[in-house]
Length: 511
Image (cartoon, rainbow, N blue to C red):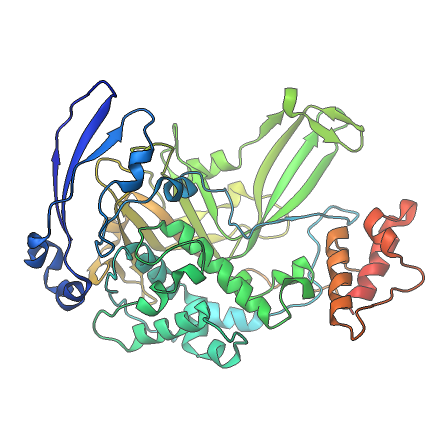
């Protein structure tokens, strides 16, 4: 894309700043044909495009103008997000949209074990340690505002256990979906990367991106949001083979291939300052998004801030079950079970049109997260960096820009990938980047989860869901419980014998 920017600042009675953008954009056919020949800088067709009219930006609060900021041409490779689109990413959650709280009813407050393993963990370890995997990065043609998708596809392609699984062409042969399937397309994509010697178009995926999440083909979107949608979509596809989510308990849902790759757990610790009782809750994590405002200069600073204790006091007091009162308490969120693949997003986008934080936050090639873990169960792992996503902007703008990435192949070489352009670089170049997303792989796979077929203790909600799924699966829509277990007791507890009751209910419903 050919870009020329002319700035002229003047303030009228309405405090408007005029930003004139002269954008030239050629056709998609021209992009495909000439991209590898210096397309952005040398394309003559782009110079024939009409000049875009000036856009007014309200310095203070005029957000309506943001909706029509740059161009109405859907084929331009850089285009503005609407205000609603921008706002969706500006305040990302700390966890993936697939994260959830697991209510614990076990005596020791530990994370309960799954009732079974959906994807064999020993097979996953083979994929994680696959030594014969050879794959050279291949450029991807920009299909019009698709740079955000291109970097995500590159990161997924070089996530070793996922790539090893897809290259065996196992998924497509077993897929139960009759309509479009993201994992089927991703399998074709990874296999084509292995076979291709020249850049190719990811159009089969990009054109159907609305099937992955709330995104649109031809629009500039956020790479982190797409990564979360993609992981969530693959997890949903993996659950198809077991009758979807309601067919298995929540902890068992966390034993799919995708959960083995990206899944982990956070532990929420709350200590009452009156009785000193500490309670734990667990959240399934698929990625981390950390703040970088203030004095954060390194990734370790950001993780320390993420796991820092906070006081619950005043209007935000904690309801202690032991004290049966609202009391002062401290709360802390730490990593309890570290994922095999750790994706960390640095929250660079802040509210406002020019609110991007462009500060450099240093990050290590080898990451030790043991200081940010609960110290229970999982041994502190070391992580090796294998992917870096960078958002290149102009004027610290949060509403438009371009994505590139740096990827380490399975032989240890680093590459800079800018859509269809692939160039080998040294590690020093990678470590100098202002990263937006970082991808790390554990130096050794996490130990296998322990299965508890009998005596598994689940939440009331999980037991109720299991009961509902049993009823749906039965021929007459009814699934009677034993005389010793009533649905009312499932919903309301079992008095003094609650611990025994839940064990009996789980034994019956999970057999």
